[in-house]
Length: 114
Length: 116
Image (cartoon, rainbow over all chains, first blue to last red; front, top):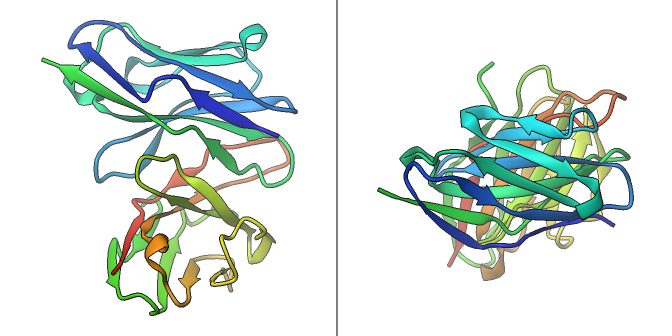
């Protein structure tokens, strides 16, 4: 079975300060992991993905995530938050067999304070 | 690349009515997925197609839900005899799948359904 746990339902940071959104995964197989972002009234957009290559993955808009197998974690970080980063973020796992459908976490809402 | 489109964007219906949603994937994509997202939750997988074949449908929520992709291009998701609990955002995604493993799924904007 596969699942993800997003440890914080809501994170609030000040503009210009670092962002950390935490995610732990569970998978019986070698997982592929993703972070998607959802802005209000917009579709889900892929931020970055890990597919067993480099453990440190760089994504769009300055975000990056590190795959740590020993900790079963895939935390999302950004050095300096921008107002436009305010959105809902989803950690997602997919397995390399069958449908490759995605299993989403419950989401973390990021608020950026001016 | 015009992206994944969904129609309608919003649908309000009365309990007991049937509704149908359409998804147009990115043109060269062979896989198409449907997900449901309820308030405060992440999207939940429902079903998927590879070309015109529906390869997984056990996750459809009940026998009131059905999906088709008759020509391997656009897809429809139908809900019969809607219930208030069906109120949610219905998302479509597409991808170009190969035997090399998981690839990126591209999502449409969703159809928001409200059942009164």
